[in-house]
Image (cartoon, rainbow, N blue to C red; front, top):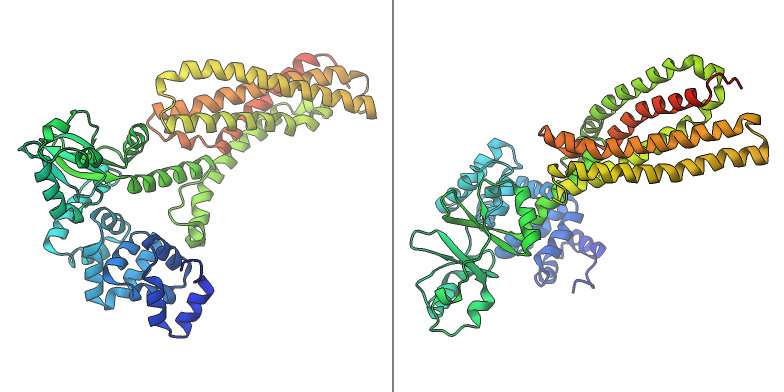
Length: 461
């Protein structure tokens, strides 16, 4: 059915008021596919489709819709209080929390007031955790068993209460005080004899998260332990919720997007590119552009310092773009590699000395390769075109040697700046590629003209 009903056909059915036919066509669709469809429709069309969905399917679909479309649907449903109330109460607690924290405070409060007492208590509890904490991601919908139970008692309990659980892949075991003491995959429970006590299935080896831990920790733990869900405890070890992989993947995507924006030399764009306002687009980029522009003024200052030398040997200006771009490129490469390694835990602050040793050697080798190419470029132009006269060898040595020094400086500064920022408590991604390139430009000019002064001392072309 998904392959037969295309977007133009759906739009035609809406325009032709063939809503009953559309409703029947959509009912077999998975919620994720319906959400994808709604994300592609116009505001009026998306509301028509959403209103056609049965209550349970609407709640499941809503969780897959983009934040912008969710808010549009909520705005449209404000007149239909009954349907809006059902929708909010049927959402899973973690997805409802993610939605409410994106809304203005007054709007969020009004929607919270529409929840049932139990759902309102859960929502206010989750919203009470710090914004970037795991508590905001967790859901209280899980199945926990007591260690004194048998497999038969446990299965009976799961049949009765399991329908409200976020996932049944993992089973959690608690003591009489509600403290988490173990977890295991449901497969182990299903394959055990009915009279087996839960304690016989336990190995007391489990991993859990704390509600006040940072969300980035959840990404690392899920990756390291290959889990689809992890339990969340309070400071005393009491089981208070679980976090599922789908929510953690959303966090990972948001973190990666934030780092990419910073590496590109701009502030984080909170909305999708096409949905962001023009003012927001300009605002997120202008600050760093101004900072980088001011940094480039140092480049002009450095060049003015060598003005008399440039006047004496004007041919040196030809190679300035070649020299500084090579240093900037090597610095950007190093910064990107180290920022990514720091963010996923491959490299720690204590590894800085090991990193700098590798980068010095890498910079020397890479600089030598580019230096050789630069030397050959000057030699080739002299050979074929006679471009540099009798002093071509000195010029080629200046270019080649400068490239070695500038590329080495680029790799060292690009790799060390993320360490420095993280040590100061800042985001390493803020040492963006444009920022590193600007810094390398200034020092690269100093290196270039210093090398030229040494090689060309007393020489006039």
